[in-house]
Image 1 (tube, rainbow, N blue to C red):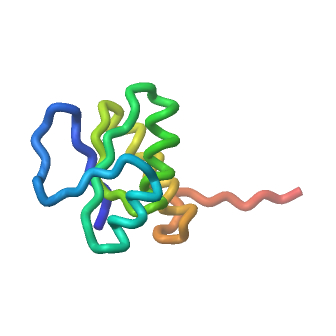
Image 2: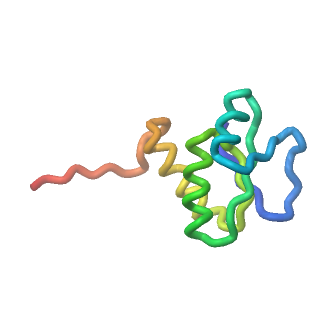
Length: 93
């Protein structure tokens, strides 16, 4: 499942299960649950938390920084080897 981004205050699916720690997110996602995480209100903290939670299986993120978090999630997915990078460069010395 591709990640979903939800703005604060927007309604969400009651079937989603909220996680409070990365370990909890990993456990819930391993059990087949769609895991929701509310990200911090600071941009740098939200990006870091989104990457860690996504790596541990969370797929729904509540954030006010939808564009920035989407980029962080795409980068994390590329690092995990699940999608090709958007741009590759070959460096020659």
